Length: 300
Image (cartoon, rainbow, N blue to C red; front, side, top):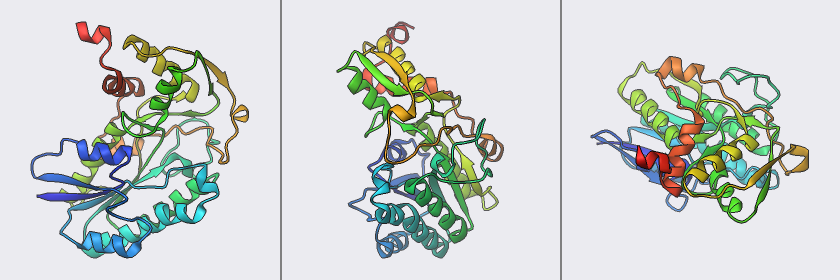
């Protein structure tokens, strides 16, 4: 049995990696914060050395973007020092590491999709600490894949889709930011991509390494995303409030957000043959879990 150690087991991505249909002979062991403290480098080293893992997927992270501004030490411990410890342990064990990073490493001031080799310039503590994790993995383990993603959503945990459905059921009108562009990412689709990359890295010593981007295909704004959530939710008997567009200035937050988080898939398509589905269809899969299939789908 080829066992893959997954950090962040209780998060959206860790949950989907554990639920993923791994091929026969493979298993994912998704560890929660209680099972592996990512602020403890010694515990990380011991866990990787504990058994002959096939690979590590570093999915655990400090993702409270606004809180990170006032809790920078913990953010750096989890987002930078933990990946450093994981990378060092993977090198010692002779196994590859697949590390999940974020669109927040970019300033968001580019027109068009961000390429993997575009200049990085994080706007806040969260993005800076995640960039630190990238550097730690890049320099700490030769056989690595760093996968940046954005706007992760699922039927689990806390995320934009679930928040919109909850608030939309309580209020007739919602105000949502319209001047931040990005591409939503279904955690299940990201998990499938990471699993494919991990298995190839394990089975093929010549598998490509480096930095990649994964999100679902197609750009939108948070406002556009909300409108599509309620359009599809209404077809499933869910809420359908009015969604008003506002600017980021009208919804101030402690941490600045990139105005453009659209990620290019060129590298992951070229090296791994992974072609993400459109975000609208990925959203439909999530809403099927949360609300059930639409009437159209049920009669098809």
